[in-house]
Image (spheres, rainbow, N blue to C red):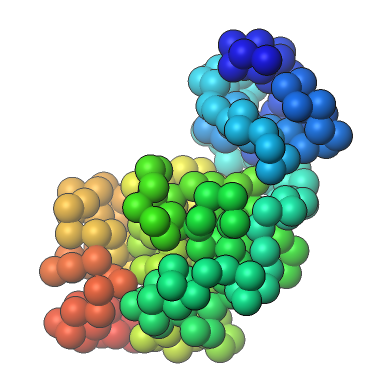
Length: 265
């Protein structure tokens, strides 16, 4: 079946913003293997059957009501999110991952204590995303140089990591590994990955319960650091710092570590 027909099938589904559903795949006829989510006005779909490669994104925009709710912060995403069913090609046991790929990746980024899975279909290290202990999605990092470098499964508005009891401080970064690095270098501080460089209402709703916020995006996003600080303060009124880094947080630059630890105290 052509991608056009699959796109047409997906685009005809009436889905609310922030909701993820499962449907039978019209291409391979897999039962409940087609995952469809509406994220930021885009229908994102992927068939999880190993023999099917249908996936894509269809921009459809937001409805007038969704725009209104977004502006007035009335979207209750926690009530709308469905639990994610882990596809069979994602292995929870890393013993099924090729050691020549997964071991150097774990050692390079000090991920020995991180919950990590493996996508045998696309050769990706997979970081599960949990809310209240339940898995709602995941984000995967290609280990063999494939494009895209990062791939999102299910609902992936953001990823968080914290070692110890959260102390009310959150550091906002771009990617998962940087969030994990923050949590390891600053005990009890929450590292939050935007999974990109866009600040959305999902992020703002999550951080409004913290007492201190530090924005520490990658060095090439200095202007966004300041922009996001203004948006966060306007939305939450919470004490917020825009921190300029020399390198990405995951690079563990000594000067950056010193400045980060100073900012979160």
